[in-house]
Length: 201
Ligand SMILES: Cc1cc2nc3c(=O)[nH]c(=O)nc-3n(C[C@H](O)[C@H](O)[C@H](O)COP(=O)(O)O)c2cc1C
Image (spheres, helix red, strand yellow):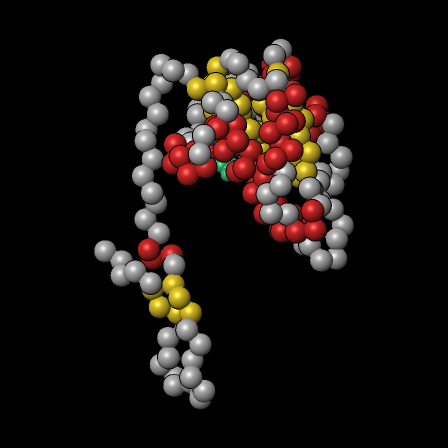
């Protein structure tokens, strides 16, 4: 699929069905997704794939903080919304040039590329977080080290053909883009620092 078409047509899918990419296909796509901008090429992340019956164990960990039966049932079923749950773990690297926030930004860029690559192959995905990212039970089940941070799950599978996807429209962004023009020297006090490029409707 051509890149612009992929961006225009990708939608997060709330429920996904089989098939999901195999471990091999996931790793192949990830190798390309990992070429996303990454200061220092630190790749400060790792993935833990959860499939099949192991999703139920993850559901139990999700439900461990729930206080009533209905919440336990609801949380426990969450990982069953897709055949593959790819757990994203931020692994901050000590680096004097690259602060943690840049490492999170690089990880997010990688995820976006991965979602587009998955979409290009006909798979659907959705990035989800929730309170489970900070749950001690979930962290312990997945074997996270103390310095590692869970930053969510990419729910992955195939789009359910019975579900309609709402087509995308571009986001109105005119009010978010301005152009800076350097002030003359000396600058008059009223010189605007930046002016909108398009007038907002
Ligand atoms: C870091 C991150 C965490 C998210 N966590 C959730 C979540 O827990 N539950 C949810 O419904 N959407 C969550 N979202 C939003 C969805 O992934 C998705 O972007 C949103 O439903 C909009 O759909 P779209 O991607 O088709 O525009 C999260 C997005 C990001 C970037």
